[in-house]
Length: 282
Image 1 (tube, rainbow, N blue to C red):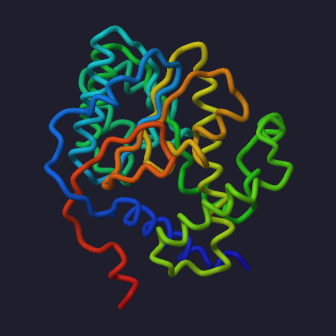
Image 2 (image 1 turned 90 degrees about the vertical axis):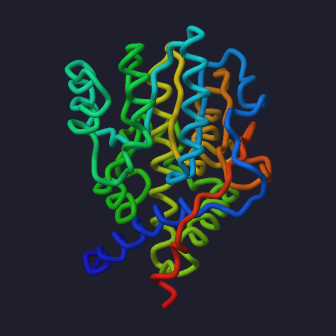
């Protein structure tokens, strides 16, 4: 029965990408450098750096933060949402064999991202020989989670570690559901909501697991703002399994309201874009 809903699954992933990019309106001039609060991140083992996917200013400010820390001597592994975890071997070969970021993008990148926004971070990794680590689920695996449940992509030990054999916390699923429904223009079929929540949570857990796998090396995560939230995102799952890790989440957001979702925010000028929901409101 599930097969007839596959077009809907593909549509909801497309809508999610568009809606996550939409952001909120804010006022003020664009920042030209990271704010002092963002720069004063101290000595950390894990730094979670968010993004509004299409906001060019946010990408520049985040890169500047990372560049300053690396030039000062920090040598983290860079986990990126933009690379699917199944392609780690390809990414390793690209990093060893490529002389510039464009080559890495050509060899290991996929079709879902505006790769030129990530070029500086990838080039920084090549220049300083920082490991690039693939952090995301493929669309195929995410669809499998939607269909078969949150444990579909995890081994028995991970299911035990993250207590996935038990119901997810109600507060977490409620907040994720709210984000997913609004992120799909309040038009997501009700039968799809639970599966989409599971897919989002599975991505967060995989990123947390991959970050833990890099220890004792320090790690920076490059991912969407939803993933770096400390209340329901990667930060939450790291605290459940590795509470001793020192970490900080920074949201790069198009509003001035943190709402307790991040340790620090970098306010961005809103990117000019079309309403991502207009195509489904006709």
